[in-house]
Length: 200
Image (cartoon, rainbow, N blue to C red; front, side, top):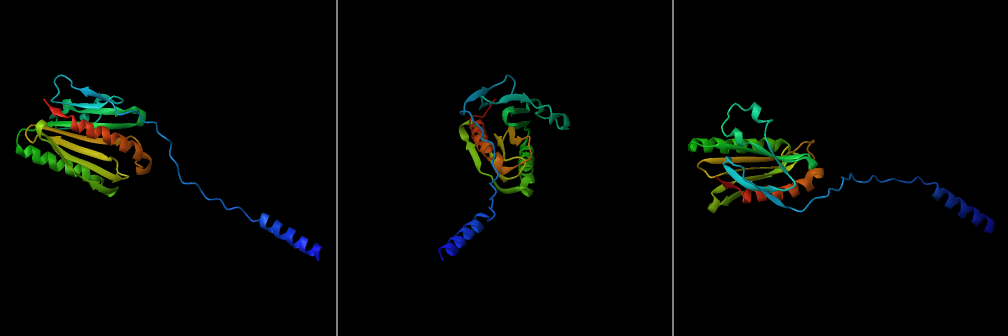
């Protein structure tokens, strides 16, 4: 009897040990990104109609890519990019001088259309306004969620003469999950740029 019980126990253990192992796939991970402290440098180039503070880990470059395709040369000499080669990202800044109220209406419509062209890929678009009355800086900050090409866009104006539009782009295929830490990090820098923006 003991022999039969022992054989049953051994065969049960043998059958259980032969049970195939089930592997659960691990969720997709992304590389950890080491981010610096937020520190800023003043951009106040002679002859430019605006100034602001930009991240000290960024580089100001003259925009030579988009400007060569523009038929309207108004303000094109003041188009610049805040470049972040270490993250393959840029904040594109385009400037226009307004001559009358009709110019402002057209520029506001253009800003709205350029931001909402991303609705096909966007999960949402928040568009809070910002106002700095003492500096005469007013505008809209577009926070675009999802796999849109540009996660953050904005425009700022004094409603009279100056108009500046900005857009954050990464030179990679949009992936909201992998880019989220960088978007969150650079959004603080864009907010600081807007806060310190002054017309000249």
